[in-house]
Structure formats: C-alpha cells, structure tokens
Image 1: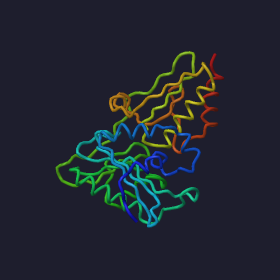
Image 2: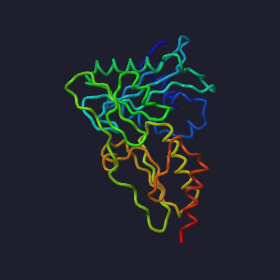
Image 3: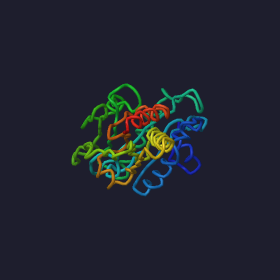
Length: 261
C-alpha cells in the first residue's frame, strides 16, 4: 500500500469520489471540482491510497478548521475519509487498512504544517464516517447535533476543543409558490447529487416552484445561516442522507404544488 498526494492525473477520479463507474456520481455535476478549486487556496489537502498494483482505493480530504463547517482554531478538519467498498467499478478495497493508513498520513501531514490537533465529524450510527471508528484511533467526542458527532485529537495542550456551528435561521416560504431551498457546500458528492436532483425537479415542475440554491462554500454565507448542506421544501427540512431519489424529491415538491390555492 502507498499513500500519495492528489496529482492532476487523479483529479477526475477524486471529483467522482472514486466512483467513476457510477451514473449517480456523474449526475452530481461539477460542484466538487469547483469546491476543490476554491479550497485548495485555503489549505485543502487530499491524499489517496493505492494498493500494490497502483490502483486507487481510498481518499482523505482535510483543511484548516477555520474554513470548515465547525468552529475552532489551529486544527485541521477531516471532511471525508472514504475507502471504496462496492463490488462494481474499482472493487472492494475495505478491510485492508487503507482507512487507518490515510488517517495516520493526514495526521502526520497536519503536524508538519503546524496544526495543534485534528478534528473530524462522524455519525453515531454504524455506517459511513462512523464516530466509533474515530474513537478507536484516539479521537474524543467534543460536540454533537443529532447523529452528527464532532470529534478531535489534540496534538498539544495549548489548544481549545472545537464545536459545531449551529443553525442560525431557516429559509422562508415564498408566498404563492412552493419554495425549494438547497444549501450546498460542494465537498460531498452525495449532497451535490441532492442539489442537482432538487434543481431538476423544481425546473420540471414549472413556475409554481421557486428554487433557491445557496452556496455555503462561502464562509460568510455559511455563517449567515449556520447550515452547510440541506434541502428544505416550503421551509421544512428533508432528510438527505442517504440521498433521496429524484422521483422522491419530485413527488415531495409536486405534493406541495397540489396544495397551492
């Protein structure tokens, strides 16, 4: 196994989260590419894991916490660590130690960059980005919103633990129309997919639907709302993990259209 920095030859694969075989990944548009272009000037780091054949099977992306969706100072924040586990496409690379190797490489890189610690987000339920996995690797819980757990690993004693940035306000319903609001940061392919599906459904349902896309990769915009990635229909949140299908999103919007007087 080898851990390498992201190079131009692997960028397209990275933008598709290693799912170059997936039609859903391509449906998610170029949001991650645009996010990467913006964030690489703000300290974004990306590393890939290769097996002994040179095949890329995993990735980790992290950046200064000051540019993330958590509050803190002097830390690096892990947006995503992902080892391809599908039989389709690249095949299953899990259970080979790639995740551990990526995490260790990122931590060492952050130390060399002068970071005082590492932060990560995890989910309390047993699937992707499991909080329990980070705890096994020395991370401690420092905050929580619902099933989203904020964890950290300090490298020194003169550092303050991070905290979640909480929602400040919610989108309002536009009178006489169904209001579809999507907050999108760009870092997550799954949430980019939600954005594109909601936008397409809103367009197809016509002028009785008002679509509002909010780019939260702009830190000031994110701070204004306190919401990173989310879908609201008439001001009510819609669960987006895992991403709802296009048909489900369209049905939800169409159901609200029918109730218009």
